[in-house]
Length: 295
Length: 217
Image 1 (cartoon, chains in turn cyan, brown):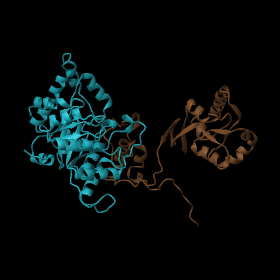
Image 2: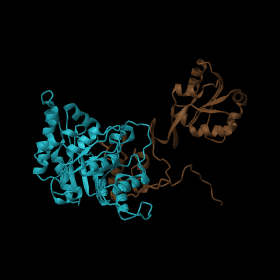
Image 3: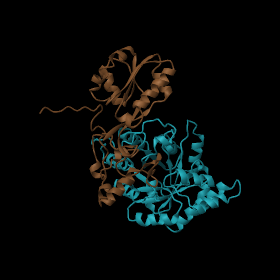
């Protein structure tokens, strides 16, 4: 059994990651419960960074909590709220406190969140943040100054395999790999044929790919994502299937669909694993894994 | 031609700014804010009417040809008496004009507009921001389209994940500039330019506030 996320990626096993969202406030009970529930089941847990630009308990703090409770953790870092000084400082801090996996993200727009008048930063972008990690690992900072003690990270990024148009996304994807991404967690995938097409292209690169699985909780939620979340396209058959669930059974249906997709991805060996996002329903992740037959 | 794009402050906001200032001279601008219908002759007349109804004394009004021009001082000279009677100038030009007038006259100035951006007229009645004067121009590598200005996040290495059908995640009325750049470079058979990794930008190309002095000849 591999012990670190990096080893899990290297081992060739079907890797499973999931995410836990820090709370709005300092009551960490539910967050801790989710960590406890997942720590022995997934290969790593992402801790989100002010997800959807909503101010929350920090990702770094959440990662420390995972380290205390147990389990592998992936620090999500967006470029929205910190300039290059703050990002580098947080990377030094993370490395010094046993956080060794980072997911580099651009970050959603401030305007989509709950502090709509805030100043957005975007001093760096996701590919530049990846490069910064590699520079820090070389013992220097972005200003070219020597570090007294460097860092070591397993760094990753994201891609949207169902983006339209896809080509600009793929150019960025290649830049992220060139900048040092070792793993990719994709945006939600609902059309496995399209995903296979993406993988036929992506396989040429030396990077591990985990297919994003977002749990559907109801037919309206699926329609909402189609309308509001860029690059997410829930197929009509799946929406119909969700709508067909008896009253009170929609969540169970969503778990079944997510499990079925994961099982299919694994059986057909489409990619290196999955990243399960059960937004707001983190407690269902073990059920999804059970439905997929991977637990 | 570049234009200063403005929008009217709300009536409430202007009321707050004019609190305690009862004798007002109103100055419009005959250039950009006339074009955008935010501060030309009709808007000055409307403000005069609204404020008069609220009991303010309007000592006079005028629309200067180009508020941001240094010649504005000469133009305003003929209104000297009316301006003297006022305890503030309410100005419907962009902030360039307001600041020009503030330097020229010893009067409290109150802007009636918010200045949004320096834009270009891209169609009838359509104005777009196309340059933010960042001081480190990269449009030689992006097909002449500026991502620093036209990407909501100012990204220089390609689109974020929020792009959708060529539109921006914040507003479907706004194009994703990286789709535009991609299409342009593809058409020019220069997609290699988009594949080039752009290093972190120098955000201090011209440290604020910008200053330029003509070197001695």
